[in-house]
Image 1 (cartoon, rainbow, N blue to C red):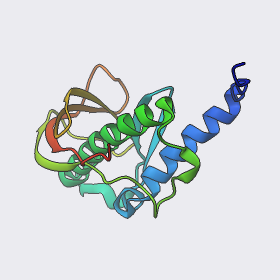
Image 2: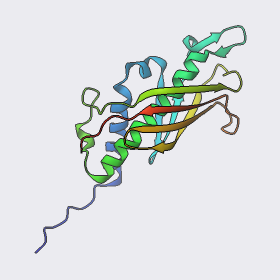
Image 3: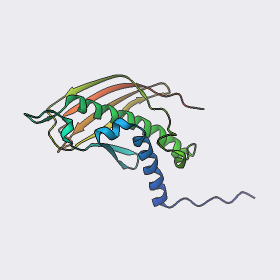
Image 4: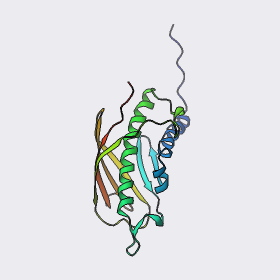
Length: 171
C-alpha cells in the first residue's frame, strides 16, 4: 500500500512562498536597498524596477541618470536573475524549502567576472525597468544579457553583457 500523497498547496500559498524567497534574496544585499531597486515577479520571470530618486542623477542640467547607477542597476538585475533561476529550480524540485530563506541564510551570489555596458541614450529622471536573459548557464560559469528601458520596452536606454562565476552548489 502506497503512502497517501499530500494534496498540493493552494496557489496563493505557493505564490507567497515564492515572493518570500525573492524578497529574502533582494533584502540580503544592502546596496540593492540603497539604490531603491525592487523586483516584480510573474511566474519565473523577473523585472527589475529602479525607482527614481534625485540621488540617482548624474547630470542635473540635462537631467540624466548617473551612468554608474545605470550600470549598477543592470548588474544587480543580472545577478538577481541568475540567483533566482537557481533558487527557482531548487524550490520547484523540492530540494529547497523557501521558508528557510531569510537575509541571513541565503545561498552565495554569483561573482562578476566582467560586465560591459552600452549606454544607448540618456536615462531620464523617472523609473527604469530591466530584464535579464541568461544566455548560458553551467555549473561554474554563466553569461547574461540585460536591457533597461523607461517608457517603451522596445527603446532601451542601456544594455549590458556579463559573465559570472557561479557559486559552488552542494550536491
